[in-house]
Length: 310
Image 1 (cartoon, rainbow, N blue to C red):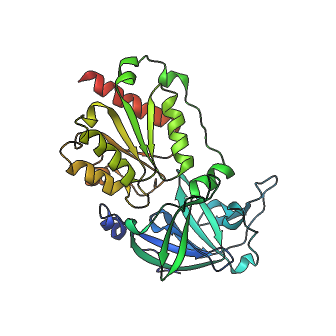
Image 2: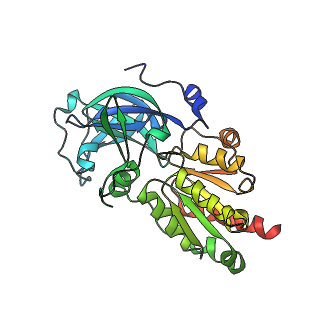
Image 3: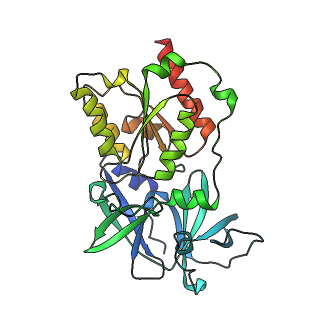
């Protein structure tokens, strides 16, 4: 499947346009699923897998690909379905999430569609907190489900969830009393990870599920005649989100006279394709790859110190 991926340079042309490319695939049934192409490094026919002793049941084995050993997760099993059969005719989507590269075993790969994040919607109400969906959309009159991969990975290999005491030992009570921190992320797992880290530093955290909710919250502060930059220490935003992505949220904030001075840090699992030039391009102040509680706490502490110095 040599043409399944465009170059990174071509894909970055969508930055700030609230658009994404969605790679659609199936997990052994008629239901279609999607993953942002930005996260995908390669798609290939499933190679021979080597089983590991005492492995997580959803990890079907490891594959040796281009000099690297990659864990292969049966995505159907990971979201509560049955194990995929006839592995030799399955595909692996090799993707980079949260600083690691892994393969997701799928039964078939469909095609890539170019969409607006406004066409991507939160899961239906009633889907429950245990749902593995982070969003849904419609393509050719068919429902396409977008899986919360961060939830899957947190269950397969739970990340470190504590913060070293030496990072947060300094008393910043005056700043903590004055400011809140806004966290915007469509993944419940990611929101809770960030919230737990920041609350351990003594801050009140406000969470929102997408850029639209985040922007509405900030505008509500200014609509009440208050100055958001005097109440919100920083905005920590994911990039991939339904309805409004983090790029567009950043651009909207920068375009609002009452919001433009807010400090924005993009905090995303799209760790392999970003650099400081792209951060500046979308108007963000900082970028941090998910998820290291120590690095997150250090970034927040740096922001505290910057505010105290002014």
